[in-house]
Length: 522
Image (cartoon, rainbow, N blue to C red; front, side, top):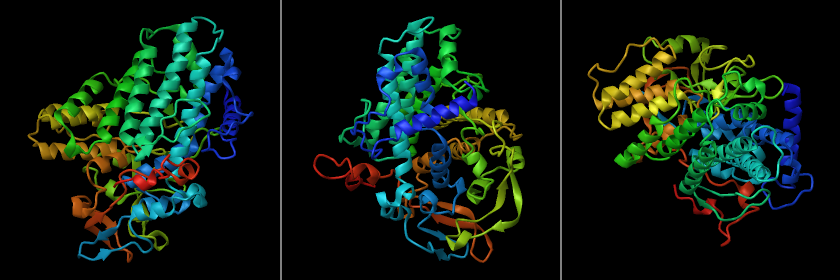
């Protein structure tokens, strides 16, 4: 499928998906929306399958939503009020080297400011809105695919294999949807019927269980399909735009392994590290042992001139997003990734618009370097998990299970793969605390822009209030007068899980009249 044909398809699908009077009132029937009857041909269901990218994981996801996750993990910062960004990376206070406590120049704690703006009146400036709405758009499209796949479609070739791939594709996206929802919202809805919703709000743990269930359903559909099946390859290639196939397409086995890795992420990032049990570690070990391998292709996204140029790897060069000093200070001396990916500014950016000293840095990302580019189709990021993430989960399990050097060897492997040019740390006598620090910094750097920065900060307790053992000490920050501090303390005090957006609860309250937001316990 050529790019212009694809973008026209994307626009049509987006119009059809968003054509309800209110996008969140999914029970409103609209005759302009596609129905399962429209997918009664092989070509029809192929086009609808391609539209999964447009229904949820398009520019707003890779730009706005991923931006939120990276700023709340303090990997980058965004001082601008667009989309509610500036309030999402506002620590409650910062203590400078001399003991001076610096409060936000406007507003208070992050959670208070985000909740003040949880109103339909704020539109897309309500931070809680974007991820919720896009994920449920994608879920609705996946539900449509499942209806279409169960209709009497005359597939060419091996119809059974092709139908299984379409159903696996739908279940896979539903797995991603519920993983995203359960990893950021305190509650949500499980919706398996196309075009309708319900008001049965369930906990985020139930959403994660639903994610795993959908991944399992996809794995089941792929079972029995060989890695060299020609019908599998032809149908998968037809539902993915050609420019997203530059890194190859996953075989059936690789696809299943990618979902095992994501199931491991679901458990890891939604459990506080100090609350992990031996059973938890063993479950993750089982999953990642059968997770993404070094030569496995995975589903990817890139920046393309005819579809999407708005994503984090480009917008760090457009004056929207900036490298955090707390990220840069995590690099070990001699890490070649820093030399390739970051450069010193001619003068530091400090306290942008007087909105807070967290908005300051002396570093720029290098265009075309390690993590970012303004050139199209030159950089690719996994839509789900990556081989490096699988390896670092193996490292974490082994370190926490007492096999320290075995775990460190996985960290060394990731650094070698990314050409960090750092000396190996395995078999150098590191104790468990030192090993955990190697893991922490490698997840910060090796998985930069992979969408896990906030999840990690949450499970490690960094975003917790200082009085509850959270925060970060020994931080680099620039004060409002342009002085560099190297031993500051950040009391982030961020919401661990977000409230359901008012765009949903205003139209879809609980049966007892309470909204999901009313019932959140932080």
